[in-house]
Amino acid sequence: MPLRDDQAGMSCSFCKLDLSSGRQVAAGRGAMICNECVEISREILQDKMSEN
Ligand SMILES: [Zn+2]
Image (cartoon, rainbow, N blue to C red; front, side):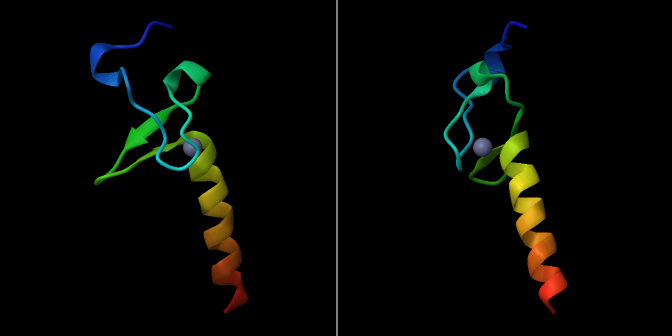
């Protein structure tokens, strides 16, 4: 799947992998995150919430 111009150079702020690795990268405010890091952070947050 070819990258669109506005996706070129986008890489995850956490794992530093970019779209060419096959990951989906979403841009937030001042940071970008890929689908893998979203999953990881979601699990971490769920663990933290279940601690309380
Ligand atoms: Zn990532």
